Amino acid sequence: MRRFFLLVFKGEQHGQIDPQSRTEAIETWACRECESLLPGHEPQDVRLRAQAPMGRQPLMGSFSLFVGFFRRPFLEVVCDGDIDRHFHWAFVLGQNGKPYRDWLIAVGRRRIALRGSDMPIHNYCPVCGTLRYVSRGGFFLYAPPEDVDVFDALAGQLVVTEPVMLRVSEQKWYKLNITEIPVAPEPLDDFGPLPLRKEPPDTSTRPE
Ligand SMILES: [Zn+2]
Image (cartoon, rainbow, N blue to C red; front, side, top):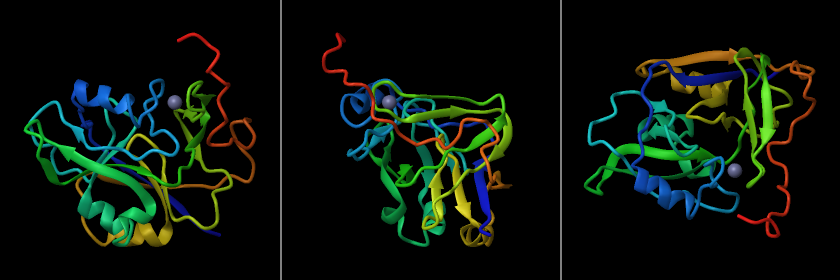
Protein backbone atom coordinates (compact mmCIF):
# COMPACT_ATOMS: atom_id res chain seq x y z
CA MET A 1 0.00 0.00 0.00
CA ARG A 2 1.41 3.36 -0.99
CA ARG A 3 1.97 5.95 1.73
CA PHE A 4 1.45 9.68 1.27
CA PHE A 5 2.92 12.68 3.07
CA LEU A 6 1.89 16.32 3.30
CA LEU A 7 4.70 18.88 3.00
CA VAL A 8 3.83 22.24 4.61
CA PHE A 9 5.74 25.31 5.76
CA LYS A 10 5.27 25.74 9.53
CA GLY A 11 5.76 29.52 9.56
CA GLU A 12 3.38 32.39 8.96
CA GLN A 13 4.94 33.99 5.88
CA HIS A 14 3.16 34.05 2.54
CA GLY A 15 4.22 35.38 -0.82
CA GLN A 16 2.95 38.94 -1.27
CA ILE A 17 2.16 39.70 -4.87
CA ASP A 18 2.00 43.28 -6.08
CA PRO A 19 -1.67 44.32 -6.69
CA GLN A 20 -0.91 45.43 -10.27
CA SER A 21 0.80 42.09 -10.96
CA ARG A 22 -2.24 40.27 -9.55
CA THR A 23 -4.56 42.29 -11.78
CA GLU A 24 -2.47 41.37 -14.83
CA ALA A 25 -2.70 37.71 -13.82
CA ILE A 26 -6.49 37.67 -13.51
CA GLU A 27 -6.76 39.37 -16.91
CA THR A 28 -4.74 36.58 -18.50
CA TRP A 29 -4.03 33.24 -16.81
CA ALA A 30 -5.78 33.24 -13.41
CA CYS A 31 -9.51 32.80 -12.77
CA ARG A 32 -11.14 36.13 -11.84
CA GLU A 33 -13.27 34.39 -9.23
CA CYS A 34 -11.03 31.87 -7.42
CA GLU A 35 -7.65 33.13 -8.74
CA SER A 36 -6.38 29.66 -9.61
CA LEU A 37 -4.60 28.80 -12.86
CA LEU A 38 -7.16 28.57 -15.68
CA PRO A 39 -7.26 25.25 -17.55
CA GLY A 40 -5.11 25.38 -20.68
CA HIS A 41 -3.08 28.37 -19.45
CA GLU A 42 0.46 28.80 -18.17
CA PRO A 43 1.28 31.10 -15.26
CA GLN A 44 3.33 34.18 -16.03
CA ASP A 45 5.98 35.86 -13.88
CA VAL A 46 4.62 37.72 -10.85
CA ARG A 47 6.10 40.75 -9.12
CA LEU A 48 6.31 41.08 -5.36
CA ARG A 49 4.89 44.05 -3.50
CA ALA A 50 7.80 44.29 -1.08
CA GLN A 51 11.50 44.19 -1.72
CA ALA A 52 12.24 42.32 1.48
CA PRO A 53 13.61 38.82 1.07
CA MET A 54 11.13 36.15 2.02
CA GLY A 55 13.29 34.14 4.40
CA ARG A 56 14.65 30.64 4.14
CA GLN A 57 11.46 28.61 3.90
CA PRO A 58 11.31 26.01 1.09
CA LEU A 59 7.65 26.59 0.22
CA MET A 60 4.70 28.76 1.24
CA GLY A 61 1.31 29.97 0.13
CA SER A 62 0.37 33.30 -1.39
CA PHE A 63 -1.83 36.13 -0.07
CA SER A 64 -3.31 36.68 -3.51
CA LEU A 65 -3.47 34.37 -6.54
CA PHE A 66 -3.97 30.68 -5.81
CA VAL A 67 -0.39 29.57 -6.45
CA GLY A 68 2.42 28.20 -4.31
CA PHE A 69 5.79 29.86 -3.76
CA PHE A 70 8.68 27.41 -3.93
CA ARG A 71 12.43 27.60 -3.64
CA ARG A 72 13.88 26.16 -6.81
CA PRO A 73 16.43 23.86 -5.05
CA PHE A 74 13.60 22.40 -2.95
CA LEU A 75 11.34 21.87 -5.95
CA GLU A 76 14.21 20.22 -7.83
CA VAL A 77 14.62 17.68 -5.03
CA VAL A 78 10.86 17.07 -4.92
CA CYS A 79 10.80 16.56 -8.70
CA ASP A 80 14.11 14.69 -8.90
CA GLY A 81 15.45 17.41 -11.20
CA ASP A 82 12.52 17.58 -13.62
CA ILE A 83 10.31 20.46 -12.44
CA ASP A 84 8.56 20.77 -15.83
CA ARG A 85 7.25 17.23 -15.53
CA HIS A 86 5.32 17.99 -12.35
CA PHE A 87 4.63 21.75 -12.36
CA HIS A 88 3.54 24.74 -14.36
CA TRP A 89 5.81 27.50 -13.08
CA ALA A 90 6.98 31.08 -13.55
CA PHE A 91 9.53 33.43 -12.05
CA VAL A 92 9.07 35.67 -9.02
CA LEU A 93 10.22 39.22 -9.76
CA GLY A 94 11.41 41.84 -7.31
CA GLN A 95 10.01 45.35 -7.46
CA ASN A 96 12.85 46.26 -9.82
CA GLY A 97 11.49 43.65 -12.26
CA LYS A 98 14.47 41.30 -11.86
CA PRO A 99 13.72 37.63 -11.14
CA TYR A 100 14.76 36.10 -7.87
CA ARG A 101 17.36 33.45 -8.50
CA ASP A 102 15.76 30.75 -6.37
CA TRP A 103 12.05 31.56 -5.98
CA LEU A 104 9.35 30.30 -8.33
CA ILE A 105 5.60 30.32 -8.31
CA ALA A 106 4.26 26.94 -9.32
CA VAL A 107 1.05 25.01 -9.77
CA GLY A 108 1.17 21.23 -9.85
CA ARG A 109 0.17 19.48 -13.06
CA ARG A 110 -1.67 17.00 -10.84
CA ARG A 111 -3.80 18.18 -7.98
CA ILE A 112 -5.24 16.30 -5.03
CA ALA A 113 -7.98 17.31 -2.61
CA LEU A 114 -6.72 17.27 0.96
CA ARG A 115 -10.02 16.18 2.45
CA GLY A 116 -10.96 16.20 6.13
CA SER A 117 -13.64 14.97 8.46
CA ASP A 118 -13.63 18.05 10.73
CA MET A 119 -16.06 20.70 9.42
CA PRO A 120 -15.48 20.04 5.73
CA ILE A 121 -16.89 22.50 3.20
CA HIS A 122 -16.73 22.21 -0.55
CA ASN A 123 -18.06 23.90 -3.65
CA TYR A 124 -17.09 24.50 -7.25
CA CYS A 125 -15.88 27.80 -8.69
CA PRO A 126 -18.78 29.13 -10.82
CA VAL A 127 -16.33 30.58 -13.36
CA CYS A 128 -13.65 27.93 -13.94
CA GLY A 129 -15.21 24.90 -12.24
CA THR A 130 -12.33 24.20 -9.85
CA LEU A 131 -13.12 22.27 -6.67
CA ARG A 132 -12.74 24.41 -3.55
CA TYR A 133 -12.42 22.39 -0.36
CA VAL A 134 -11.67 23.43 3.21
CA SER A 135 -11.54 21.38 6.39
CA ARG A 136 -10.16 22.00 9.86
CA GLY A 137 -8.68 18.55 10.42
CA GLY A 138 -9.05 14.80 10.27
CA PHE A 139 -7.25 14.93 6.95
CA PHE A 140 -7.35 12.04 4.53
CA LEU A 141 -6.94 11.25 0.84
CA TYR A 142 -9.44 9.35 -1.20
CA ALA A 143 -8.51 7.26 -4.26
CA PRO A 144 -5.21 8.98 -5.14
CA PRO A 145 -4.24 8.18 -8.75
CA GLU A 146 -1.75 5.29 -9.07
CA ASP A 147 0.69 6.86 -11.48
CA VAL A 148 1.44 10.15 -9.68
CA ASP A 149 3.98 10.78 -6.92
CA VAL A 150 3.84 14.60 -6.60
CA PHE A 151 0.50 16.34 -6.05
CA ASP A 152 -0.39 19.97 -5.54
CA ALA A 153 -2.58 20.21 -2.41
CA LEU A 154 -2.99 23.97 -3.09
CA ALA A 155 -2.01 27.04 -1.09
CA GLY A 156 1.67 26.11 -1.20
CA GLN A 157 1.22 22.59 0.14
CA LEU A 158 2.31 19.35 -1.54
CA VAL A 159 1.29 15.74 -1.13
CA VAL A 160 4.01 13.28 -2.13
CA THR A 161 4.61 9.55 -2.02
CA GLU A 162 7.04 7.92 0.39
CA PRO A 163 10.04 7.76 -2.01
CA VAL A 164 9.71 11.51 -2.66
CA MET A 165 9.37 12.23 1.06
CA LEU A 166 12.54 10.20 1.76
CA ARG A 167 14.43 12.11 -0.94
CA VAL A 168 13.30 15.45 0.55
CA SER A 169 14.21 14.28 4.08
CA GLU A 170 17.84 13.71 3.10
CA GLN A 171 18.36 17.47 3.41
CA LYS A 172 17.45 19.92 6.13
CA TRP A 173 14.74 22.40 5.17
CA TYR A 174 13.77 25.38 7.30
CA LYS A 175 10.44 24.85 9.13
CA LEU A 176 9.28 22.13 6.77
CA ASN A 177 6.55 20.03 8.35
CA ILE A 178 6.09 16.48 7.02
CA THR A 179 2.95 14.61 8.06
CA GLU A 180 1.63 11.28 6.85
CA ILE A 181 -1.91 11.51 5.44
CA PRO A 182 -3.88 8.26 5.45
CA VAL A 183 -5.80 7.02 2.44
CA ALA A 184 -9.39 6.40 3.55
CA PRO A 185 -11.23 3.41 2.04
CA GLU A 186 -14.42 5.49 1.99
CA PRO A 187 -14.72 9.29 2.02
CA LEU A 188 -14.96 10.29 5.71
CA ASP A 189 -16.64 13.60 4.86
CA ASP A 190 -19.68 11.93 3.25
CA PHE A 191 -19.12 13.90 0.02
CA GLY A 192 -18.50 10.76 -2.05
CA PRO A 193 -15.91 10.84 -4.82
CA LEU A 194 -15.23 14.47 -5.66
CA PRO A 195 -14.05 15.41 -9.15
CA LEU A 196 -11.35 18.09 -9.01
CA ARG A 197 -13.22 20.13 -11.58
CA LYS A 198 -16.76 20.38 -12.86
CA GLU A 199 -17.61 22.06 -16.12
CA PRO A 200 -18.96 25.47 -15.05
CA PRO A 201 -22.40 26.58 -16.25
CA ASP A 202 -22.34 28.44 -19.55
CA THR A 203 -21.80 32.05 -18.51
CA SER A 204 -21.83 33.50 -22.03
CA THR A 205 -25.51 34.42 -21.74
CA ARG A 206 -25.23 35.81 -18.25
CA PRO A 207 -24.62 39.52 -17.70
CA GLU A 208 -21.27 40.38 -16.11
ZN1 LIG B 1 -12.22 29.78 -10.66
